[in-house]
Image (cartoon, rainbow, N blue to C red; front, top):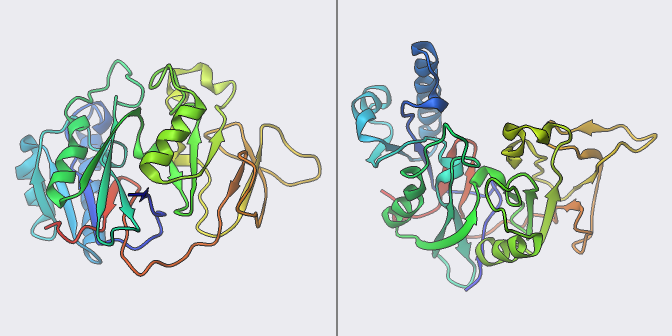
Length: 289
């Protein structure tokens, strides 16, 4: 068996979301909370026009969810303490040797680096719950990670960050070699591009907890040449999440250096695949209701 995480741009059959639940991340005023409920509702209803959407809802929010979502979105009740399912939900993977097989990587979620305000115990169980509901094979991992802390091209390359997988708030004893081996086992990747921590911003706890959500994305076979300082004579665009500078894009060979973001040409698969995107988690499982 060889699991592989497809690109976010790969076709999928269903989108999974989690409905907001009251807490720090939803906001501390009625206006902020209502804004959050409305934003999640608008996204769910928009996606539901094109594909099925399943919303994980904490029992305390079921009545509100049914009122706002109506019958357009399937509701599944499960205890929640957070609602950013991209980070704590399963990372769906497929197996080319077993057409139709669906895997669900279950990372350890600790609330984005265990800040004092975070609650993660309930959300940490959601990946296993979703995997069981869709009939996916659960793939447990001891790596503290979030779905928003990685980005893959579906052809063997994964973007990771020093602030997440190697951060003391998540994996104080991890090394690049051990993390890359875990990615190979769970995601099927063969190349890991490490985005360095921002400086001096990483002196703050919030910056150290930053994920790769704001890192470069590329659906095409190009590479972003990254360096920790500007290159004279070459226009640069600085990434707000890291100290790396994207100096230029160019086609790269498959055997690219580990510090270059190599994205080989994407091949269209005859089978539908799974990925995760934004505040949602998407799956190809035909068994999902």
